[in-house]
Image (cartoon, rainbow, N blue to C red):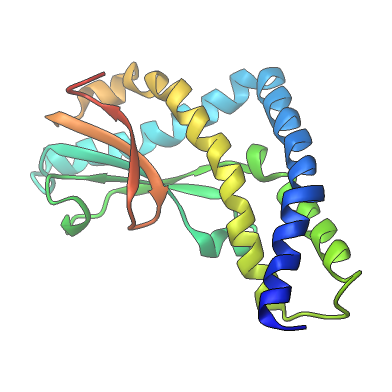
Amino acid sequence: MEAIGFTELIKNILETSMQERFIGNYGKIYDYWLSNQKSVNTEFIESFKEVFTKATELQNEEKKGPIAYIVISFLRTRIIEEDYQLRIDLYDEMFYLDKVECSGYWKVDFVFQYLHEDIELFKEKIEEYIEKIQDNSYELIKKDYAAIYNYFLYEYLKKNIKLLLETEEYQSLNKTEDLKIGFGEYMDKVDIIYDQENP
C-alpha cells in the first residue's frame, strides 16, 4: 500500500471507530474521577507539594531564585513505555535555561488506563487491511492518539489548579509576581493555565 493510502487508512479509522470509542472512554474517565475524586485529587496535590517543598529547600540554601514558571509536561517516551506520569518542573525567570533542576512526577494512570486497550483495538482494525506494519508505526500512532487523553488532563488542571495554590507548600515558595503555570510537551511550547497577574 502506498504511503498516502496508509495515511488515509489511519485517518479513517481514527475518525470513525476510534473516535467513537474515545468518546465512551472520556465518559468513563470522568465517571472514575467523580467516584474517586478524593484519592485522585489527594495524589495530585501531594505530588506537587513534594516538588514545592524541594524548591523551598533549594531557596533556603540560596541555590534557586524566585519561581517564575511551574511547568507540567508529558513525555512521549513515557507514553510509549506505558509509564503514565506527568513531569513537574519549577523554573526561575530563566525558564528552560534554569540550571538548577527542581522536578517531580504525578502519576496519571486514571486517565490513560484505556489507552493500551485502544491501541490493541486499533491494531485489529488496521490489520483487517494490512497484514503487518512496523511496531514503530504503532508507536507513532500511540503518541498522536495519546494527545486526546492529554486534553482531559489539560481540562482537569484548569479546573483543579486552585487546589495547589491553596497549599501551605505553595504559599511558602518564593515566587515572582508574574508566576505562570503551563501545560504541554516536555521542553516545548506550553499552554498557560494560570497567570498570577490575571488569576
